[in-house]
Image 1 (tube, helix red, strand yellow):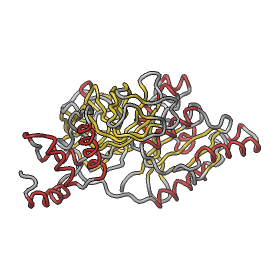
Image 2 (tube, one colour):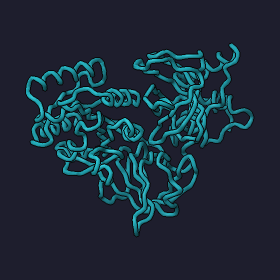
Image 3 (cartoon, helix red, strand yellow):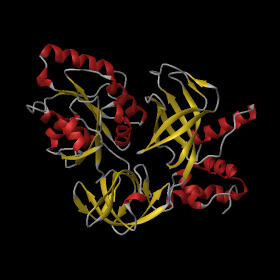
Image 4 (tube, helix red, strand yellow):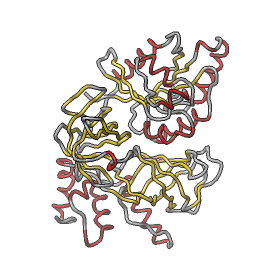
Length: 431
């Protein structure tokens, strides 16, 4: 059964970690610094067994502005969000930034929890409730339930569990077939076991004894053991919060942000063609070739935004862009990303990957811009056949291997064979 991942979001010290502890009995702050400072710095993980039979995986993210990069990494695999607002403070800066990040990453369901109910009177609580409802109006949380709780007295916790149970029982998911893929969010060594990675499995399945390749580096390792929430299992599927014990690779050879995947199933590139939503909350325009921080999966990479059709983008506008990265990433078409400004660091936009290994695009002449517009249109709205022909056309005489084409399309096995058949039969492509 596919595990569902709930992520927290909200301002620092609004009670995210305390709420998870009260709901699950699990302490997600594990670092000495987190315990001494009373704030979450790294991602924390817990689980909750619900009456509907689902085990809900929970990712606790940091709320402090200095650790938003860790929040983005945690949000990358969530299916729904528990948006936390403290009754004694209401909407705060990281409430806004976390909400924008959730929207940019395509989170589409969740609930709103007002914490610290025991610290305010009924009149103040009603005022905060109205502020919260107004803030989330006209968004994916516009009709979400608002639950008032106290992690100290336990009031409202049963209601949270009931709402989660009903939501998850009603959720349906298409099966994520194809090669296995997991975005690494932790790497560590355990005495007697060796190298361990953790992350949320994004697609496919993997079993003990299988090989994994780490992108973009290309190193491989064999799976020695698998755990989900502390239980050893033989097979991991999409949606599982997973710990993987590896053999044949050292801790220093893997980085947070790497993609662990079925060997040969991904392509790495320093160029990405994407659509970009430049947030309306920005105070200034985005200029061509602006240096930025790109967050995709659990990885952060410095890059430049090359605007395809203009020299500037105004707040609230959409644009086609090519991102030039300082280091390669391994992503699939349709993956979501977040853009943060280089300095000062704030969230400024995001979008979807359209082409995960394009050629470097020129924008000097009108002809250049017409070709770019055609390529972006095909990647955004074209058929698989249209995209195959574009990728082969842009690859030149060298062509593409079947594995490269699969990684560019995000299609594998029987699905790839099915989509290859028409252009092969018509002679548009040759093997």
